[in-house]
Length: 179
Image (cartoon, rainbow, N blue to C red):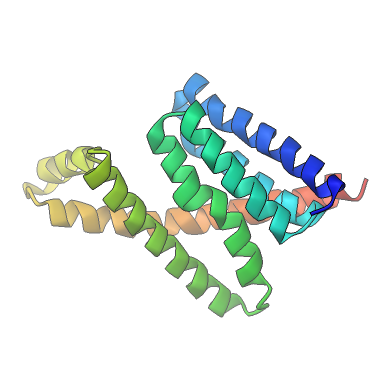
């Protein structure tokens, strides 16, 4: 890695850390802030290379464990931070259907790892509110139904996130990168 890549990486790590810290200041926009932070990885790939982006991802993830809540750090580490790299590698295939399938496979693996970590290691009951809604609407009290419903809802949400990332990258390429 040359000096230019190191400098760019350092700036992007600092910027990512600041953006992730914003989840503490503005707790209602957590997913939006995580999306903005995750957009810096593809920008790093565009301005430099994948190796520098991997450095930014790992350094930002490590620093986030010291700056922000553990659940935000884990979300960035498990999914949001690495998705830009995975998206870049998958989209090099130039086959829309295969790309979408691979992205969904990656998302679902990340989803289940995140779900297991959040519930079993951190003790966060992610689906407690969803279970309450299901119980009130359908008069059913099953954790499995709530988990399946959460998983079903997460699929289109991920597709919207992937599309939003594409729009952010396109905006960067058209309006900022060339100037």
